Length: 61
Image (cartoon, rainbow, N blue to C red; front, side, top):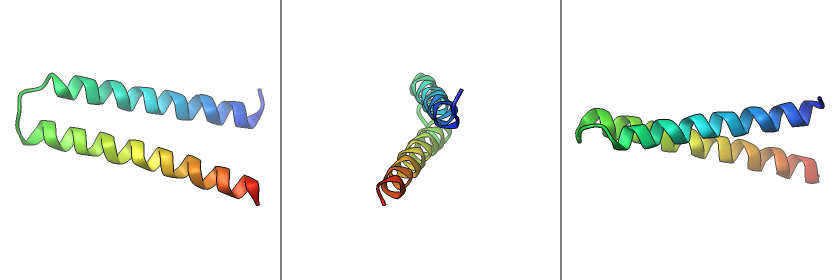
């Protein structure tokens, strides 16, 4: 497999796992732990999106 295909599969897998963790966190009792988990998931997904955007912009140059 090409390196870019492996990277895409990795990013997709990580994003899916983060999504599932976020969904599972929604079923937790309300409180600080749930809020922290959801905040971390959102930050991690934003970091993945930012990384992908930066890579795409670098390829255009």
